[in-house]
Amino acid sequence: MKICRQLGISYKRFLGWMPSRGDEVEWDETERNWMRALAEYERSLCPMCGLPRTICQDPKGELTLHAETSVCWATAHMQQAMKRWTDANGRDNPAANALVAHLT
Image (cartoon, rainbow, N blue to C red; front, top):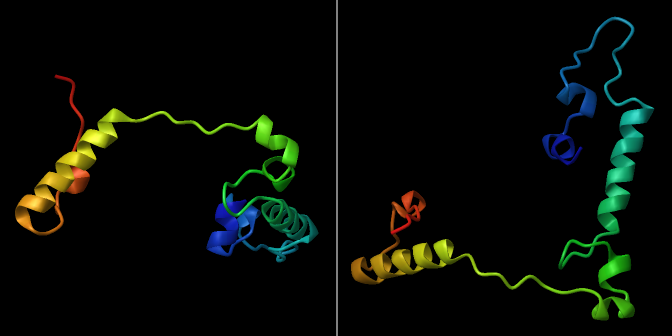
């Protein structure tokens, strides 16, 4: 549904609907209700963390929520390699997206 709103098309058009005789209305009541429900759901989310406000902004939630603190070492090493390249060459690495982690 979100992609449909971003594209500015109805869900049924996204699924391949084309106007035909007797079915010319793209945004029928069902389509409009889906978009209203999506907008209402998105308004219920916290703009900072993306969780429902009823969870993340509840004072009791402080005792039940925790943040994941894992580290992706492959990403960390690739970022270090990109920084070394940038520092050595004085500009951004044009091949930075081509860096791939390998096991040694």
